[in-house]
Length: 358
Image (cartoon, rainbow, N blue to C red; front, side, top):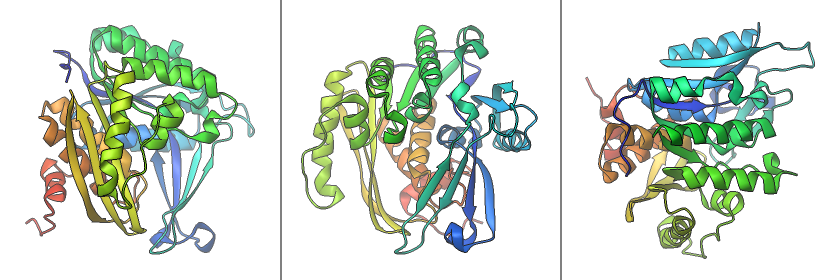
């Protein structure tokens, strides 16, 4: 694994489009409930929460609707999570103008699967522009250990694609490690397939850490997917390794390739595993059963734990284990991000120790 730069102000920086998540009380379907929980959300701040709750300095690059109570709510939430933020205040432009998007989530229960609706009309995050941030100050003067980007933000609009490309180029220039979670979404790509394939390929080519599932690697980067393996996750691991090895040949400068493995037994019981290739050596967290309160954010928790371990300089085996534990921990929260009390709590999840700590 490449070395972190020697000095930095921020351990982790994430560009993101902040929104609000609305979920029904007690795991009920949206239409059957009149009690709801509201939280600030984005996949990228879900990742960053592992580092911020464990005391590392984190910064969020985003944009806000000027004068919006929702923007005020989001800012307060980020401060409560120990995150600094920087972002342009954009005039709302009236009732049909800009707004922070809503993510409306039915978490499911038992045999009733989760359902998620996204209301992204007028999404302020689609205006993210590199000109609104002083990247020379951020990467050159203050210093950043890891820049983590997601394909969700990259694919929001032409403007955000350019924004993510420029951030990656600036990070590379100043020796910041680049993490890229592909997060392919077909609805985001519609009508922009070639443009986004080119953008994703360039970012992947300069990344140090590349995360994705079989759909991400196939549809975002054009890599041949895994061959048919066994019926269970354990039987599919070899075919996943073959796929990631094909990705490695296309992107030889990447140090870490990682993906999670999930088999849903029912909404509240999953088999959860992960594999990682680091500097040519494989590491595997064999699938184990976990009890799930809300599955949304488990993958982000895995990436967050992995990046925390990379920043701390741990060996690859510990990186994968901590990522697995962080992802499993995230599924025990009603929020779509984990709020670890300390490192020990995550290691207890990894070790299967759910005893009372007094």
